[in-house]
Image 1 (cartoon, rainbow, N blue to C red):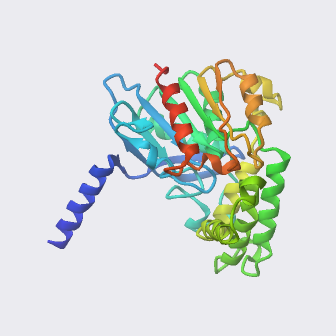
Image 2 (cartoon, rainbow, N blue to C red):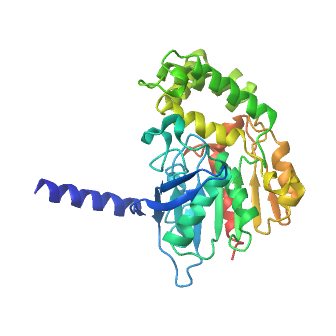
Image 3 (cartoon, one colour):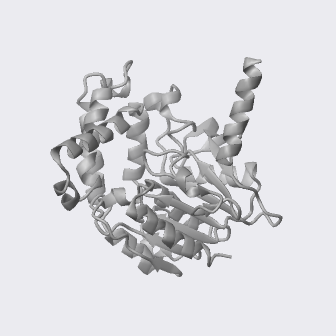
Length: 345
C-alpha cells in the first residue's frame, strides 16, 4: 500500500508539473572533440508538453555553467514563456553535471576533458536518436547555454529554425578566463584538493571560489546599494551554490566554458563561423555584464544573418539572466522571448 501511494503521488506531482522524466539517453561509443571515447555517455533530460502532428514544435533549452535541466522550470508550462500548450519543450543536463555523465560518477580527474561542442553533440544525439526529431523550432540557453545554442546554429543550420541567446558571447574572453583561473586556483589551495585525487570533497575551497566569483557576476553599482547584511547573505548564497558541487565536476565544467571559441573549427575565423547561422536569433545580453562583457553579443549581432538584438536594462550584471521569478529582468526577458517566438513558424 505504501508503495502504491508513493507511486500515485509521484504520478500526480509529475502531471501537476506537466513534465515527463524519461530514463536517461545513452550515447554509445561517444567520441569527444579531443578524440577520447567513452563506451556509454549518459544524457539526462525531461520533456514538457506534446509533439504536434508535424513533429516540428520542439524547443530545446540549455542551462548555464552551474545550472541543470531545471533552470528554466519557472518559464515552462501552459501559458508561460515557453508555452506547453503550443510547444514540446526539452530540457537537458549538459555533460559534466546534473544527472548526466560527469566526473563525480567515479572517474574524477580521469573524466574526458569535454568542450561546449561536445555538449552540443550529445544533445544532438539525444534529439535525433532518442526523440527522432528532424527539426527544432528553437534552441535557447543562458550563459554557457548560449555558447551551446550558438554552436547548434553554426553546426546544424538545416535543423534549427530559431535561437535564443541569453547573456551570450561567441567565445570566452580574457576577462572571463581570468575569473575562472582565479576560482580554480582557490579550489587548488584547499589541502583536501590533492591534485584532484581527493577522498574528501574540498568544500571550503569550493565555497571560497563561489565568494570570489560573486563580484564578477554582478556590477559595482548593484553591490553599492546592498546593505552589509544583504551583501553577506548574497556571498553566502554564492558560496553555498559552489560548495554543493563535486570539485572535479565544477572545475571541468568551468574549464569547458573557459576554453570555448566558436571559431576553432573554422581555423580561427569567427566571421566564417557566425556566417553559418541562418536561424532567426534573439540576442539578449545584460547591459551591465562584466563577466562576459557586451562586445561578444554585439559581435554575434554583426556576424549573423537575422539578428534581433536587445540589451537587458539592469545593474545586476551577469545575474540579470538568472530568471528568478518576480524580478523585473525576468519580466523583461519574458516579454522579449514571447514577442520573438510569436514570429517563429
